[in-house]
Image 1 (cartoon, rainbow, N blue to C red):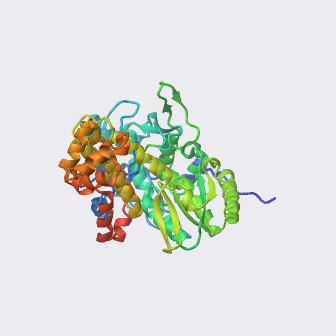
Image 2 (tube, rainbow, N blue to C red):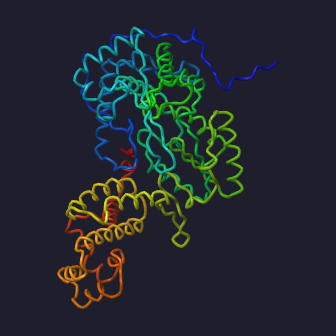
Image 3 (cartoon, rainbow, N blue to C red):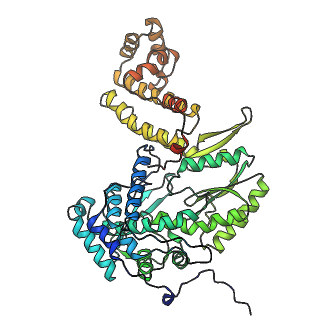
Length: 525
């Protein structure tokens, strides 16, 4: 009888050869290189990905790569050698992890983050960091390292429907996780599919949207929008360990990875819960592990010839008809739930037009007259900026308008940094809305209608027109802020003099400057 290949391969422990730890890797901890933080995507408990891109990240990443090259050329760090298809695969070892503990600490410290269950902050650990690193090194060598619990915190989901659970490990565990990631990522990254854009060096939400836009431009005007339900909580440990064993040849490192996956979770009420499946969302290692799990989905989509873009657990597959979309939805859902043992969120997944679907905060709309594809804000993103703008510009603002504008500018700069790939019209629309919100604050502070009319006159309005606008009929504050006389008097230029930034002007300057390809590929902070 023909023996079928197991869906959940397990590597027998007696076949995993332990690689001896080399002194050259341990010397990195004592000697160390130049401390340059690695700026990639945020790993620890960031609530939003929508923040401005940092142009300095490219230089810091380059310096970081140079540091790696120097350590490699000097023989300080052990690097696995590539083999041909008939030879042995690259292999990660515990010595390589130990050799990167110092570098991992700098990365964890730069990310800051909240304390884990033991209550130690970054500052607490920093005060005695050399001893901490030496202890970690000794415990990893001897096998005495014990993985701590993970503190579970819940944050509201962006759509306001329910909460998302995050896992915050202790700072020492984050250092170890980050070191493991630094070892595993170079081994897996070259083999990941180009359709994957989440949590990867040189890729971001912007690159994902640009690729999606190109598919729509090619005539694939229907999208199969697939969302995985509670993905980070449903990852099958047995399958994941089988994938990790393909690159990890050190038994002690495999055991450590298994311990990290099964770390207990400390719930807010103080109860400790065992982990039988899933990857804690919030630790430095979880983004890489999620891509390792879903890389099989990427290559299956590629094998079937689909045009797709995936960012973490959100995948968009672009097809040419609704009928094709329904067929792809059914077959890929069966693959995900059968082969990968994950679950498709039926409520959030659907087949539709790109301009009706929310993907990373954007939607794509075909402009037939202009023969182009516009990148627009999704309805969810519109609601978020409207809500946040209302919170930052309350009608009963009791401070000076300058302070209000400063707070507003801080938010708008970060918002623009993420959404600047949208069209000019989207930017201009929110500029006008924000100015009207500020006018409402001014009118509210002026209180009396006579004062309102006099203030308009003082700002350049004709006396007759100003008084007519204010006194004609019964109008609310919001209605008073709308009108040609108010718009011309309390104009865009007037608010610019007060310090208000313009989203549209920043967009025009960005377009005029041009977008270098390497800047487009920078990851989001």
